Image 1: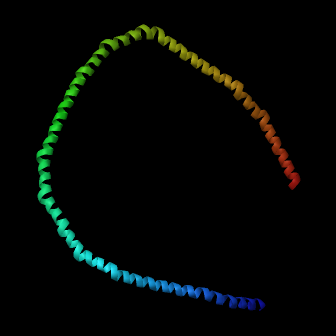
Image 2: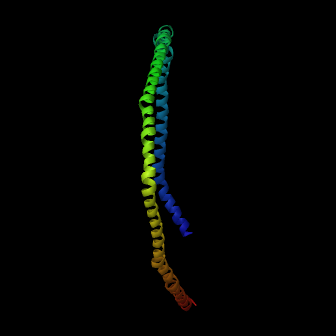
Image 3: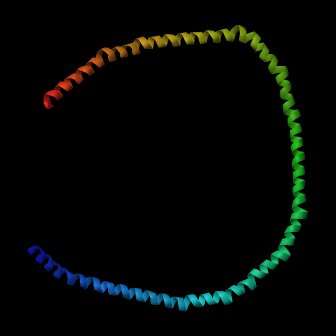
Length: 203
């Protein structure tokens, strides 16, 4: 009962303060909204409606008759015929001439490339490189280079196998021994001691 009376007293003290703050704010908000609506109505009637009337009945007809219609007439009766004439009687023949010149130039370049590059290269390969290759193969490759390379390859394979054996004996086997005879027993002993400690502490 005392708590309810205390809350009632607190409400009685706070309520006038809230009313004194909220009510003026609400009135100010309503006043601003009313002023905003009035300003919007006034702006619409004083500025927007006259501008809309001016655009619809003055500016748009003027632009249509002074700019759009003359430009449309100029394009239809002057520019379009001139461009069509230029395209048909100047650009197309010029393009055809350029294509013909490029085709002839390409044929000349292809003929020169064939007789000045392809034919000499073919002759050089046939009469120089092929005999040199055959001489190299029979004179140097078979009796010298091939046996040397084969011996080097066999020596590399033998050294690779020896290196693998040395690696297994010097690294892999000791690591396996340490893991099997040292680490696994130590690990098992640590687990056993941990179980004994856990059993002794927690039952």
